Image (cartoon, rainbow, N blue to C red; front, side, top):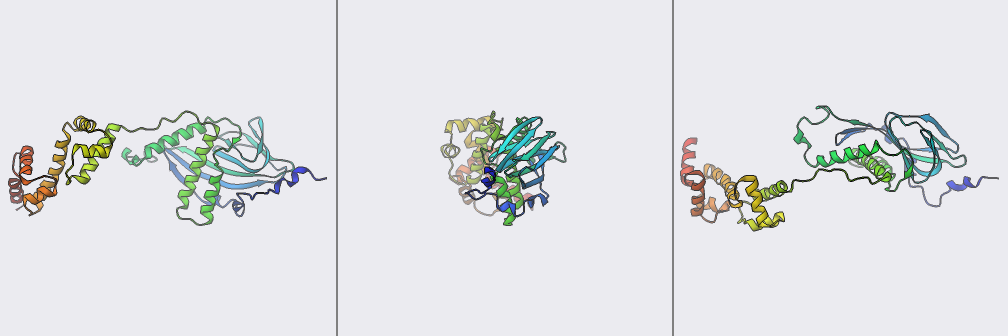
Length: 327
């Protein structure tokens, strides 16, 4: 008489990872290494494998991280000395040095998705950027997130949990990118691996929020205002107009400029406009009126007043002096 579990493989719904079974080890052949925050990640294995009924893998350990997911079937795993039942939808992590034993059910095969990676902390000047400013464009967030994730990986309990956040889907995403020869294959694989790490740690516990870097809002708003002024200095800008763009009150914006520049908002804009005026006086033969209007001054007379207040000379005298020096 047949065991009732023998028919369990005849699933009514299609197996989501059938595509990967065409070439289960295809991604293993790719030499993938990348940096995530201050860590180097090297992909060792990224594949689908099947355990025939009763098949087992004897006790072994790795010096790297191995992520195991069960998309179909059942079996058991022994982590250290503790046995656990495995079934569809579970995942478990074997970190560096964790002894483990795997076995499929005696009557039912078990499929497994496996990601085996080496995670190395980058610490040398060569590994990291020699210039700390090279970490611009959002990498502070990436560094903090990578650090938080790796720290959590090191402290996760050694037991299976439910794949609540669908990390398994990332395997198919990466495989499909390879199978379809999608543009940006390396980036898709990198993002898939990072998502597996993040979703795995999240499946175990939400944990405390990582101490992610936050903005210095005063400097942030100042930079926004300054960039807006640089882009629109020729327009009739007012404190109210720029404050609205930065989404703070005019009084707050005025205080920010006083604190960070020692000058008022109006004085800052005047200096920005005068930089352009000086350049045009030196290089252009246009009239003072034309230069004044194009650079945001209401009239040549007002430019004359502001220019002399700042430089102790008139725009015309500045032009003559600089052209004499050039000649």
